[in-house]
Image 1: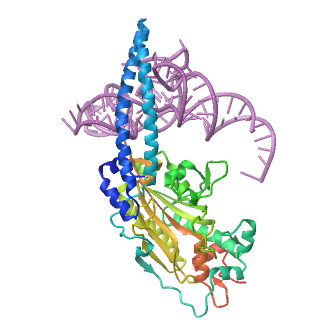
Image 2: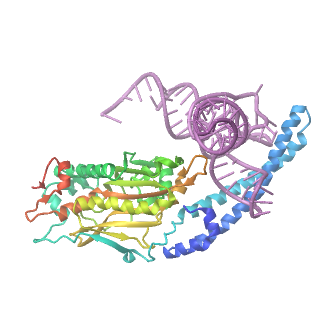
Image 3: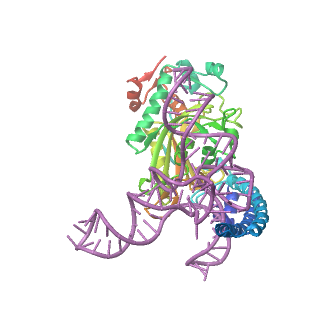
Length: 425
RNA sequence: GGAGAGAUGGCUGAGUUGGUCGAAAGCGCUCGCCUCGAAAGCGAGUAGGCGGGGAACCGCCUCGUGGGUUCGAAUCCCACUCUCUCCGCCA
């Protein structure tokens, strides 16, 4: 959510932002009109409330001295009625104002390239080269099925499409990657691990920006105001919702493993095979709460932290900076890590790292006090995948496959696999 | 699921026969005095949001959340949420 006062005094900046993102700017004019109306009502209502408060104090005094206050009381009866009407109108205007404000995306950082869609994203750097095979490589869904470590058919029997059963070494690989990632981030990158609820409530989903605009992307629990978390970003960021943090504690860096659940509404027919697009997947997420002055430095470090996983697993990847048309609703700046996926013959997103600046913090009311006695300010929040486990497994199987259909385990992962060096039939 | 208790400022904790209560007191924190310096002691200050105004400053709102009663609600009524205790059930 943008700061209403900022929008009021910088409407051109917001209009420019909406245009660069390819969004309609009509909402902005509607917003400004509603804001003006709101303040007009406030001025009138507050003046009446002041009069009522003064009269109340007067009545209290008169009651004590035994004077007759009935004329003031009947006068205030009318004033209170008028206040009630204004408050009702105010509530209506504010509700509409909030609806509009919740629907306005963040303002892209000046370093973000202007572009319409993903075709205008900018590759920032590459690491490694696309894997070259001396044989015909298999896609991960065939490898996994042939090795009997992935079972898509039985998963669809249990639940439906876009689910998988990991089996044997495959199941162990899930645990190994989660542990490897969490250990690396906690032991070498300075994150504190948390294990949050996988179900989130409405306020949390509003806090990070999933609601109200993207309700159809989540699974909702019937009869409850709970949703299955689409990413650990939601529960972890909302840990500190409504709090004023001690400035000394910043930056707060958390990593968390959670299962993630996405309805994938609007993705029908895309990536239907394999592990790339599942309704349920595992992910280790990195979340930071930082001082506004350092959030862009922290973003670069966050990307590096996520990259370190790919480097250790020796998976070729590239880092892409999202353009204004693809930066995401809540983000001011976003990098994607894209891993080389031989079956797709292209790079596929495996991590998304964003700086939200104060956009989420304002929604979720997360502040910090720079020093004792100083005024509380909004923190900047960041998060990024470190990494998505399902896609990591897909990339691992495909890039580390051998001519005989087996898959080597990257050296650093072997300890987490009980010493296993390869997955064989 | 049943019964009971509770939810107040950064923290602890008063206030529930409605009337200067945004709120006592203590702790913490900030500044000043004292001191060579510190501690102790003394003094002052110390919630957040919104709005008006050039500013000084002024006003409004907030005592879990949302409604209601009333001229007026932290205090009364209703609903909900959360925490704690006991019982039941249960991995």
